[in-house]
Image (spheres, rainbow, N blue to C red):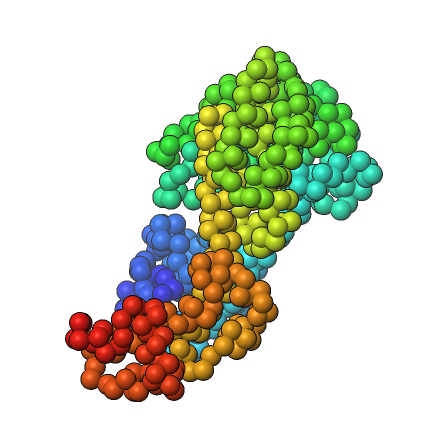
Length: 537
């Protein structure tokens, strides 16, 4: 409903306007009536109406002054001016304020209706225009954000240092505003986001925008990228602003910590500070160092700022822990899907790690990541489906990302990979047994017919010789003996539960010769079919 205020010093005129049409039917609602300029002005300020129907001449101040003051307030209101005389000079003055609707007294019902319908249509068009502008603006902002994310995504996941591009080229390609100066990455990480009651992505967006708000005043450019559990931010600022920016990191942390606590959920927040670089090529280095700083939280603890430059851990190549021999051993246990041996391999690698003095927590992640790559490579080589490998990699990475201590990471990775190997082994056994299961199913469905090994092999699309070989390996007997046993078991049930003659029993299980059936039954069971019937019927 559009809100309407009626203004006229003559009360009867106001009453007439109120009753002359069905306001609700047209989509309007009268919310106030005033009889002088100040009174109507107060109503407008309080209610912000969509339409004001006002006489030109009123006590206090006239309709034109009322229109002028309303426009100065910035209130978007459509005015309909009414007058008992043809005050064209007033109409011309009203046009200056964008008033197009001018009615003469006595007011005609249809003329008022037409004017209101025109205003309603204009309002809808204006609302639609505003909504469209908001939608376009939002879409543009989302597109710009996606382009900025693409810049950081290229560096993180494609190992692209942008070394071949200068600042101007990058600005042009990604719509950025980088300048000559300093470049630095910071990574803000959330941990323990196990609650389904809160949207983590929304929390991360709030953290990203809040960080931008605090730091942007001292930066030429600020761009960010949202990961599953954190925000990677790239800062570009002048040499003179180095200290002011660094000092703001504590403010950023305190602000986010307070915000997280206000959510009443069990989150931990840690900020990893990357190295300060003086060229655009150094952005990838700063990102790597910010990520390394975050990894060190598994030793240094959560809910703090960790500056990569201040750490003095010893870096050791992962190849010293996972040697060529150990990698080959790992490949072998994955290929054979031996989960017990896999766990032993992991334990040995971390036993070797613990012998090192002051080792970097990053090495824990490197051992796990190398293990992941070996497992994926080996599983791919033995024919595991791509969909399974993608799912494995995604869950493995999530466990690694959510680990907040070395013990937690190692236990989670061992448990996960072991369970996956066990599942894959069971699936492999099911796959290898599938031809046998299909052959048994064919026998159960067609034992009463003259079936042969060759016929069954053809039905399940296998070589008869190969089927014969794997069938005996799986069941311990050859195909023909299994078929005989199957038929004899059915014959037993027929002998016990029916009065069928021996010839009929023989025919029902696939034999046309009753004597041959009897001889075969005695060979398998130890007694003749007739004796069996006497014993069990």
